[in-house]
Length: 296
Image (cartoon, rainbow, N blue to C red; front, top):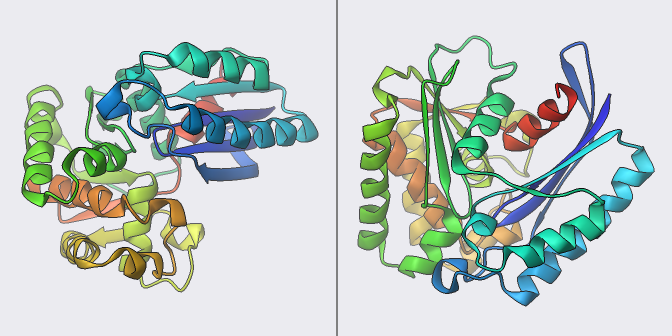
């Protein structure tokens, strides 16, 4: 079955077209564009007109790819920024017009479950239970499983923290640590034996830690990055200028201004929960959405 999954987050909009058969998924297309849909949402509670247009422009390109490849099922999922926006109907109407399907503005719990499913298929050789952490632009999801024993979505993300704290590292750390305390009260993180990290902030930190000359998903997927390396990369990123971060070979231009906050979230998670390393996954909520279409 050929399916098309679209994940619209706070920072990026992504597409996966995949052929799924016999419990195996084969990528046909995997695309990502930084659109910063969540621009200003933490402050205003509204999706900005220019952010919506950037998002719709990317989606129109995705719709052409979906039509060209003849996907049998399409699912569009929107997460943190759209959940928080008072004018989300503008987004919903635009997506419906572009794809011909109703976008689903999922809850934090639904987002966490999709992320867990996408990240842990094929994650063999690592001790269970897993703590899967999906660091997004507006929120971060925490799930312990398999058979998820608990999950929580908290409003700490690389875009949200960058906008909220504007270089105030003390305030950002306090914000993150307070959120992690809330997670600890709901999610049995102490039971987890393997930390699995997802999304662009995590994969970028991994690429830097591995010293890659260019972004290489195959090298990054299921790499194991020590707590010490996560900390070193975080300190390095936070000390760099904008131009220095932009010159890093694995850095996507759309992450340059928010990667410091994303790395800080990962660093605080690793330290707070005392993990020796993080296993990095290139598979995440996008893959979970694709599987959900095939198994419907």
